[in-house]
Length: 169
Image (cartoon, rainbow, N blue to C red; front, top):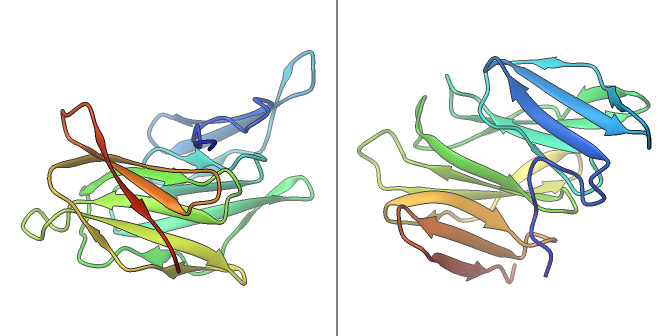
C-alpha cells in the first residue's frame, strides 16, 4: 500500500520542514506560490506530516516526548499531553514516522544508551496518543508505516532491508 513520505502531504500540496533545529515551518501550495503557515517553535527532531497535511508530529531532542499539532481553522492546535516515550532519555530518538491518515505514529528509540533499542507505536484516539506494545529491535535505523499504520517496518542500521510487523489490535 501507500507509505508515508513524512514531509509532504499525499497530494504534494503541503510540506513541513525543520529550520535552524528549532523551527517547524509548513507551507501550502496554492497552484502558483507556496503559502507559509504559522511557525511552530520547539526544540525538536524531524517533523513528520500526515497525508492530508493537517497533523504533524515531532519528538523532542532534550526529553523523551512525542508532540503533535493539528491544523484547524488556519492555526496549529497542540494535541494535549504529549506522549512520553518510556525508558528513553534525551538524544536517543533515532527516527519517527506518521501514517498517511495521521492516526498512527511510530518512534525508533534507543532507550537510554543501555536499554535495548525499540520502536514505540501510538494510535491517535479521542484527541490523545494511546501506546501499543513496544517492538524490540537490534541496531535500528528508522521506522516506516503503511497508509493506515497497520504495518510497521523497521530498518536495521546499515542493512538494505527492513523487518516488517503487522498490527492486529
